[in-house]
Amino acid sequence: MAAKIEFFPVDNGDMALVTLESGRVILIDANIRASADDKNDDEVPDVATMLRDRLPTDSQGRSYIDVFLLTHPDQDHCRGLRKHFHIGPSDDWDESEDKIFIREMWSSPIVFRRKDRIESLCEDAAAWRDEARRRVNLFKNAADPAGIQDGDRILVLGDDIDGKTEGIDDIHVAIDEHFSYICGEEDTSFSSLLLGPLPPSDDEDTEEILAKNRSSVIMQMSIGADGVDNACLLLTCGDAEVAIWERQWELRSGDPSSLEFDILLAPHHCSWHALSYDSWSDNGEDAVLSEDALSALSQAHDNAVIVSSSKAISDDDSDPPCVRAEREYKKIVDSVGGDFYCTMDDGKDSTVLLFEICGDGPAKKSDGGGDGPTNPSAFGPGSISRTEKRGGGRYA
Image 1 (cartoon, rainbow, N blue to C red):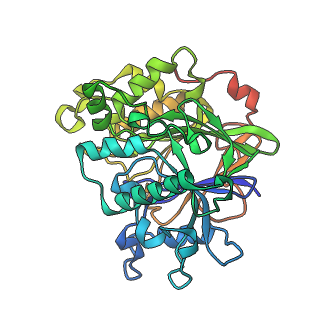
Image 2: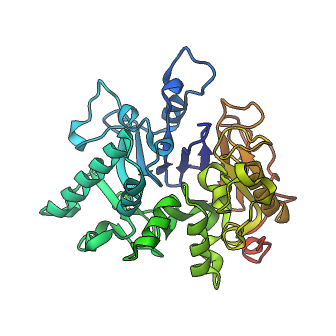
């Protein structure tokens, strides 16, 4: 099966589907608005149907995703969870409801704690939190954890406070850990490196900063294709903002390879606050850019792509998405012969932004359909080998 990454048109929100050569499918966040479910509303794309049309079914007739990665519990990252996805024990899946079956959750408890510190969880986020707890407790109490089945699995990303993630090593992924297992099995077409959330701090001021800067799961996914293990590096980062990116650069500037990407999903829907502490609407062009945050987000391979999962970007004081953030990201990709895309630009609100992965890297297709790349050299003249990509061409 061809590896691919698809970004859904969900306005200011995130929803991306990664399909691996192995056939495994990973959903990164979801933003299924009520208007998207309204058959009489032609203005908002029916992304739930778009998603279902792309999913496999199991022997019980259930549409499923192997993994649901929730990067951040804001509503625009988990909207539609209760309506469209099965929550609860795997054996309780109801054929009459026909909800999408989540074989394995990837979730970070410290991200939820930081969110709850500054703002109450929305109902979908609270449902996710409760389901994550159920799955963790099932693992803790299982006489034989190896017997836990699909629909009850979870990976816990990063450390929690007060040693709460101790004693669950088999389902815990530490910061800076590589892993390549999905649903309890090794997948040779994929590996991932967990970069965030930043670990809990005993310093209250630090925790306050992390909470206010939208602590999120940050992950560098390496997607294999055509016998090349790292044919495409996808950097996904939720809503992580400037203080987090400055800290990432402080930690990784000596060896920034863990921040490299072929495709970057721009943090917080192309918000200026990923790059600056200053308000764009208040300061305009006088807003000060954080060079460290910019450096962290500039580790682009030759011909790399940055995607803004957002409404169309306007030349005004809107944020997100922000026109000045777009300009900064375009500078990054222009310097390496790449491109910048917005999921709802140019009136193409009903299409899925699709990148098909081959051994030479990702090639953009015009939308979610068709029989091949519209422009196989969209990432520059000729094919770009992985050794060439590794050799340089990064913006900073």
